[in-house]
Structures are given as structure tokens and as C-alpha cells.
Image 1 (cartoon, rainbow, N blue to C red):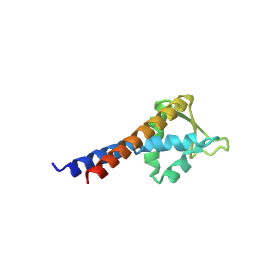
Image 2 (cartoon, helix red, strand yellow):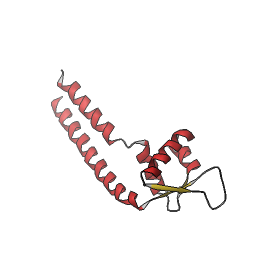
Image 3 (cartoon, rainbow, N blue to C red):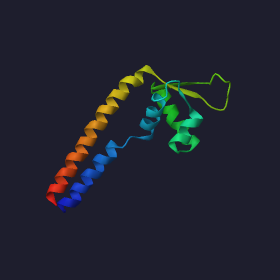
Image 4 (cartoon, rainbow, N blue to C red):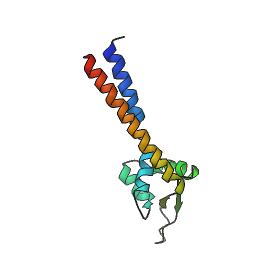
Amino acid sequence: MDAGVAMSGKVAKAANRAAPSLQDQALELIAGSSSGLLQSDLWKIMGIESNTCSRIVRKLVSSGLIYRERPANGNRSTYLLQIAEKSRAWQGQLSQNIDRYLTEIYVLYLIRGIDN
């Protein structure tokens, strides 16, 4: 196998690991909102279908990373999503993982550039 092709595969794999999942993206958005985020706004911001967002939210709730409640305005068609304390530790770990993966991608890029 060509070394350039093999290195490209390694870079692609590292890039895929570094790309945050939809769950990670949703959690990041919810955590970034000090007063919580409406579920109906979350799927619009993320550019995904509402049913996809519902599955993501169910997973985050069942994992204990967020909690959801009906908004104070009485709107029964959406939920207010808020970060759980367990997520604070997760955010720190995510940041460390992203840094590690980006460093790995950069090093692989440098190695690939030197070989060519």
C-alpha cells in the first residue's frame, strides 16, 4: 500500500474521532445557554429533524447529562432543556479529548507533509 494513501486513512480516522457527535453538539449548545434551551430551538439551530433531536435528547436525559421540563410559559409543545451537574465534568473531558485529537491530526498532517 502506498504510504501516502495509508497516511491519508490515518488522518481521516483521526479527523472522524475529533468530529463531535450530534449528542456532543447538542450538549454543548445546551450547556452554552445559561437559562436553558428550548428543544424546538435546538433542532433548528443544529439543522436536524425534530425526531432526530428527540432521540438525542432522550439519550442525554437517560444518561443524566441534561434534564428537561415544560417551560414556565406553559408551552406544551416543547421542553426546556438544561444541563445537569454531571455534564460539567463531561465538558472538561470533552475539551481534553478534542485537544488531544486535534494534536494527533496536526502531527499526522506534519508527518504526511514531510513524506511528500
